[in-house]
Image: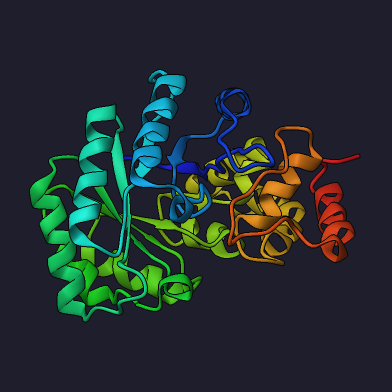
Length: 292
């Protein structure tokens, strides 16, 4: 249903932690103008964990309104409580989102059967396309390909964001689930190879700061043009790596601040990017030609 470079959008904030609506509008225009193929609203990179439910729903609605149908909006609506995830997913549908992205329930470490029943309950409760999101490095739970295969049989579960960086996992899921179920990379450093293996795109942190190049790289990889995709990806590899010098979204928010795109605000328990890493990330930004 969706493909290409899909930005895991940051939530711009003032130094006091309040959402900066003017900067948000500018970021949306930046992505539309630079070819971003879809916007992921209020996911991990959007600091979903530090927003309350009212703020979360309001921000999804605001992003949908700002995008105004020009590109798809996929709302992050996962939670470690099934009832909360259902509530957030309903909000997203009412706001006009095109689909929802649901991270595996974090912290409480459910079984594979628990993961299946959690996502099945959300899919049955809210009739909107839903994309599973597996990122065990953050959630402490790994949704196995066998569980993804079971969930792929539910009509409105349409894809999975696989963020382990394990390319063999990408191939396994594609083989298990078939051509009608979309697999997306959630790991910028391996995204090009994942797309060449059959993934439909990349849900990307790097796209926040290099949207045009990420769109071009994904487009080339989707066409099977390895050489063209590689030329772009090599220039971006420093960003793929250095944007994770500290926990996402700490570095990427600082990078956007450095680019003059938004204030430096971030919410506790996240903190402003450590000064010791500034020059390392600046060098990656220069390599990518987004800073002079």
